[in-house]
Image 1 (cartoon, rainbow, N blue to C red):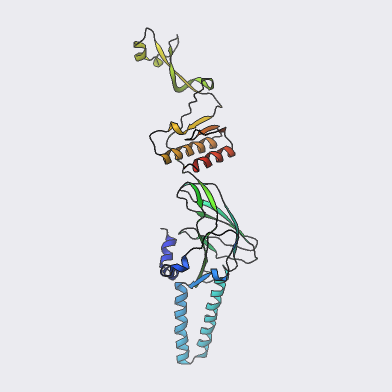
Image 2: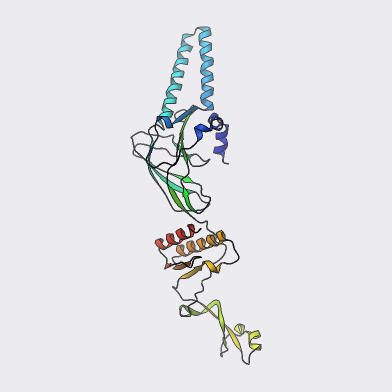
Length: 320
């Protein structure tokens, strides 16, 4: 776990959350918009806040014991400051409204960007933090700035529910920590992880779409004067009355690459999907057209534009 999570375990808030799981439980998924009303915002003192309260108690005992009006006045002022800071911390989350959200396209094992749009109520919230896992991500809101971006972890391809998010703040003095939960009733599609350890086979079975002079073995033919000696198939020629040479060809320029599910043998299912994903990404980056053949003989393409790219990745992500 990260340093932020480790630090949270050591705080008084973390101890209370572990001892009182009822405060930390998330609500059922709810449609947007979601408004954080009074009963949805929790607040507890931090370690610094408890230390400050102990200091105030000691000052109060000393002021009363020595009947020092100046010390008593200072203690009351500091106590009022403590109470006022608690109100300011609570107001950081009170009436905060999550209006909508949308996620970018992302791949498995990478953090997925999620864009949040809050209602602009004219109130600045400079200390707002949002966490979708153990990582606290600062997301300050100011007047006229109501959109923030956070990232969520991804562990598997396919449709993923937006994780429960925790919104928290400790402003202005870090003496109190207020937090609340929002569980949006939305899903996002996570593309498969990218695996690029094997180059795709570019061979196309249609002989009309092949040109000679490549580096892929196409077959044997009779020897003609001028053929390179290194292409002579000596073993095959020994079984015949004349010389045979190996013929090589390649895909004609501009012809689409062929990414076939059934061409990947000897690997598990998820590895096949990851390799096909890597090939699709490489072809799209190179602006080279490609055809994707899935396990149910469904053919996608040819194409090389963004629509074809996302169509192929969506099909791979939704495979059972």
